[in-house]
Amino acid sequence: MSRPTQTQQPPPPDDDPLNPKAAASALDFLLMELVPLAQRLTEQLLAREQALLEEYRRSRGFDWRAAKTVGVGYQKEQQGVRDGSGDGNGEQGVVVSADGSAAVVATGGRGGGGGGGGGGDVGAVVEGSGITSLGFPVMSEQTRESVFWRLDGMGYRVGQGLVERFSVNKPRPTTPLDAIKFVCKHLWILVFRKQIDNLKTNHRGVFVLTDNRFQPLSRMSVDRRTGIKGAEEALARAQTFLYFPGGVIRGALAGLGVEVTVEASSTEIPTATFQIKTKGAKP
Image (cartoon, rainbow, N blue to C red; front, side):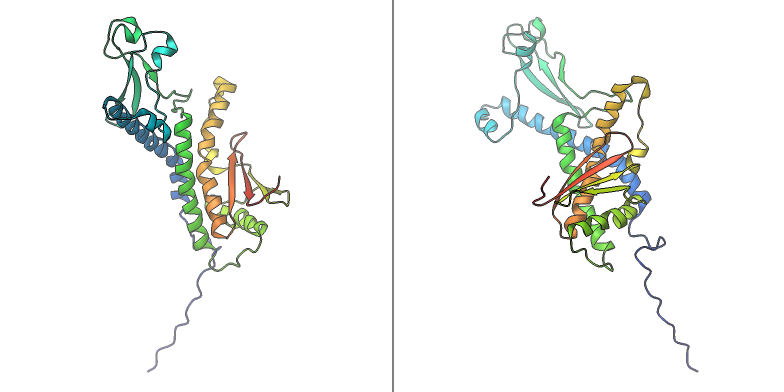
């Protein structure tokens, strides 16, 4: 008795919502936790670097001129000059806590340093991170730059992987405009479950993508009680949440054969704008 032959079912299409190429909920949690995690890692690494520099500074064999030449740029013994206390013999130390955070403190030097108290052990904290009105830590410029490169690189690799997996059965874009449209229509739905709201171009290699309700910014809190200050703090914090999506766009376009630079910004929460410039673009 012959068995009935079973017909092989065709693979589901890429646009099928029951066949997702990425876990959208997992990506939401990733975006919420990625920026604080990157900030903590960066601050811990900077704290360890400062502690090592302090240790090398105390050793006799450390050449400060060579260190400045290679771009270490460590500032030493500046507190006494700035506030007028001490005779220039005051020292700075780096205190590293168990969680990796650090603060640079002024220690009393010889002959009246550290607030003129005759050689106290530890003076006032001269450098540290501030806190916003909602209790979020304020990033220094050095930390912000390090967080940008870390998140942009991570987003670049994610964007490349998404394009490689999602564009297998789709025609490859032949022009930069087609690649940008692919990002606006297909990739944005895959990652953020909506299309880009507005796409503008000068037809000379510059594209501006606008998302009027960018999902990572839609849950961000703003302290309305502080007025303009609270809005400025929220916009500064929102900027860090655009580093990773900007890297995703750059990596996705690189996977499609288009080399670009991406500048992300937000002038009003939850709106996000991504300015994309191709190689050789003209303003």
